[in-house]
Length: 80
Image (cartoon, rainbow, N blue to C red; front, top):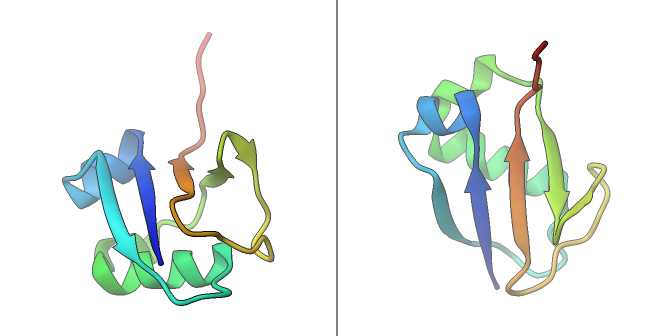
């Protein structure tokens, strides 16, 4: 299976990417994806504060991913 991952803010800065396509195993979850991202980009190991959205809906770690899903990795946003 392949998923499309959009990276924003500090996550994009740390990885040097704004979007990537990843091959994942069938029945992979958001948690599996996070692990895969940390393996591919070790600089993310020290950064755990971000939200994940799957197909434009926020998702918890146990959400199952499907082929061609679009996943957004969203760091905390602040402003005034």
